[in-house]
Structures are given as C-alpha cells and as structure tokens.
Image (cartoon, rainbow, N blue to C red; front, side):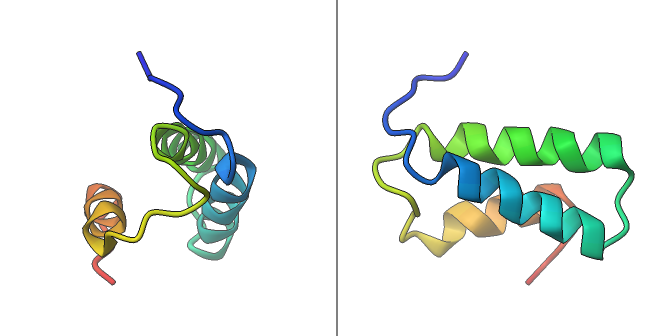
Length: 67
C-alpha cells in the first residue's frame, strides 16, 4: 500500500535502478523488483528527488551496497 504524493521522477528512479542493476550484473528479476520498489518510494515524496541522503543510504543498504 503506497500513498502517491507526486509521480514526478518515478520513471527516472526506475530507470536509474535498472542501469545500476545492469552494471552490477544483478539478475533481471531482482533488478526489476528493486527498480519498482525504488520508484514506489519516490512517488511517496514531493518532487523528483529527496534531499535527505539518508533516504538513499537506507535503500542502498537494503541492496547490500554501502556508498
């Protein structure tokens, strides 16, 4: 259940994670699931990006990436 606040940036969010998945050689199913989850997080925020770096850090930690 996701409360949609703003769809601006959702497509870019999805695409950016697909690119990360391709570069990192993630299996396609994982790549698409992570891309969808990230885009879903973005639509819950106002604007195309989130200024709080902790938002991105948490997502990357969930994926096993630390930077």
